[in-house]
Length: 386
Image 1 (cartoon, rainbow, N blue to C red):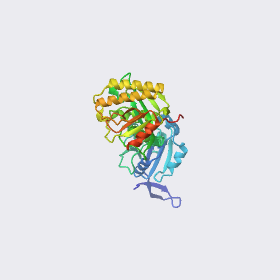
Image 2 (cartoon, helix red, strand yellow; image 1 turned 120 degrees about the vertical axis):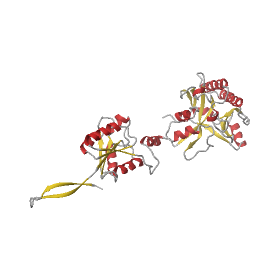
Image 3 (cartoon, rainbow, N blue to C red; image 1 turned 45 degrees about the horizontal axis):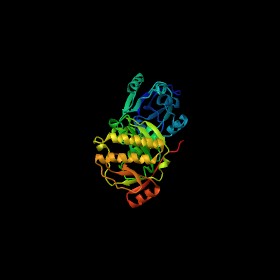
């Protein structure tokens, strides 16, 4: 309810002073970038408007956004102003172009002299804004983030979502597994892997989940995230998100972060790869610290790297066979043999899930897939150069 004050006015007809009661409007002021409007902004504006009777929204100009956020505006500021002005809870829209970080709205604020400056409770400029409010006797109000009507999202989250691909490949690792885990890295070690199709999407995932094909890396990419950090936080390696983002047939340096040494068009592998789903659980994190032959794993990785450099499928098969021997020595179950197979191994190090088979000829692969109900053909994938 509006507060009341008394003002005097001289009546020209009878020279008597008459006393009128005039509503004093409580003005609320908010500021921000508001670059891509979403439901969280609408909720904040609504709650701020409820603090008074008149809401002024100030948004950062294109120049301020460029200087302070280092990004272009999503739409020209005149368009943004028109959109904001049409919101039912907004009474006035101004553009902040001040150079002081966090106070680009200062000139408008001092001219309008609002009663309340409303901010979210994660405001980064508390001291500066409180001092500004003290200059004119304005209340500084932090609005707690109440349970939203929609799932929370940020402008940066929207940008990531827009940039995210609709589909992504998965991956097979040929050699060097575990050498992408920081505590097991070796200077002379390599990680050799390849992106594969069929692709996956958030709506269509044609593989068993949690099965050694780098699904967490693909899931991160499809949601606009870089999965390297999250994989390392889980105590596993970075190769899944690295190869799924890069695509192709790749050789990586063993170490704590992805370092691509060589990438080849993988079409030489077309028609030669298959997957067999073992129908047993795959669990990489719980197997990180298990004893294994890292000398053999490293030797296999160096041979696989040479195979990529020389585009030699037979040598790649040898490296896969060496990696498989390291897995057997670790205690994994033996995989079914296959005619024409030059190398087979479990994908990843999780003791289950999918196994990759590399064949001499496409006819051998076809016969293998027909023989095994849980087998499927896969092809190498490399994204087009743009």
